[in-house]
Image: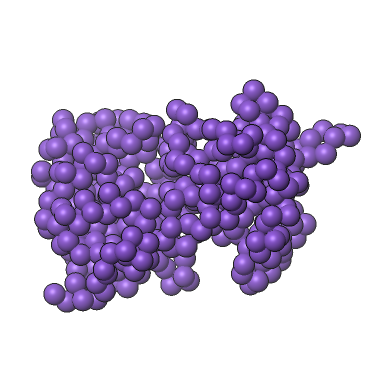
Length: 372
């Protein structure tokens, strides 16, 4: 199979879809790897690293899209990239379609087959291709939130860990999954007073057993959230409904109950955000103010630590990429129902229920299109 990896073009996106190690593995199995020149530069990988791995370097993304049977990326294809997709071509990347009707309709019109990292599952009910970036984003959230809390950036001017005689920042983490757990660990490690909210009692028991008094946890209800955000210096939104639009858990009206200069960090922004006032931002202009509350809503947070993120993502995606290349997408999905869960689009048909429900589009079962 010809596997192509273009350079990411989303603003301030420095990750790359394939590491040289992944390229070497693919080449060793007899596949051809085509890399756009400079694609790995933001993550610290030079063209020479890919050439040494056996890949071929081309000058433009157009050459990659025109040549490759499978396109491997990080972020969802941008409008210009979507125009280069073609019928029968395989796209393997993050998609986050539920809050993005334009992308969804373009992918359907292209006739391509699109497998989304964020909906591939595992035997434990987890999301193995989302998890590494969730770990990175979770660990980054208190870091960027503490920066936003600084007075010069519009925040309350509160130090996360306080100092002797002055109490620490109060941090509320909504969601106790991968993002929330890592966010809570780092925020608590910075000395903050942390409370995690979640609606799963087994998850709350797990957090209590593993982390004990490192941070507190509480069952998540609308009332509990409303009460806790009133005293919070920082609220980290870490909720996820796989493939679906994130629920809005803090309304605009509730901002008036919060402390002036408090910070909202919305890690769910890729799925539309979990605060009513959230809108996607970039690393160039990451924060904005609504009613005196600072919002940090960068849609590709892990891109800020591109080398760590790229290697972590590559470790997770490589086995699936190789299976797709070795077997073709149909056989690979038939052999692995967890990979089949990643199938979102095929030949003009939507194949993921949560996206169809969010966008009002009819959905065809993946089992049906595989057998067609």
